[in-house]
Image 1 (cartoon, rainbow, N blue to C red):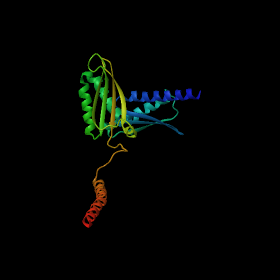
Image 2 (image 1 turned 180 degrees about the vertical axis):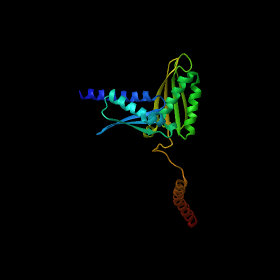
Image 3 (image 1 turned 60 degrees about the vertical axis):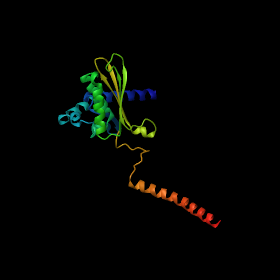
Image 4 (image 1 turned 60 degrees about the horizontal axis):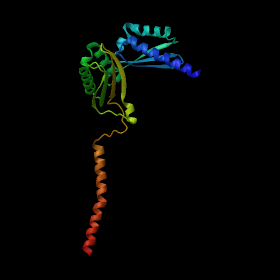
Length: 228
């Protein structure tokens, strides 16, 4: 019974998150987190458009709070906004942006939209980007397309710092799946080595230390030969 109640709770939580995203609109919300505190539920909305989410005089926040109380039976929900200053490094916002472009201009423009987004992310300073599209682009049969640039970790612990997201575009020919992976310049890579002046001087010192015993051996050999 406990497992069923946990599943039911998680389904209700997922439904609340999806409803918030739908109410605000595609392309404006990256993530929705719900934290449970003794005084009530804290709903944190990560967005690149905080003004649109809050509304004039906080009317949209008040409407969301009312819906969460009435429809999803939350006791004391408190909506908090987490502003995203650099949306180019947020995979979900970029994936939604491509989806909105495909829905607006159609699948014929998929290459333009993908390359434009790729360049936008890389110009912002990202270390690497990968965009994958899957669907009827533009033919009658579904096809996979991949657009990539820069350095992107695929495996190991360093791959965990890559921001990944999925989106879906409903076009006239059919549904198009979008996957975006971004390696932010702020990501901490375990295997990254910064080649600076300090590192170069240390390497030079190590090389000189290795040379010393070799030079001493050659001098000793010369002395032995002279004695003979």
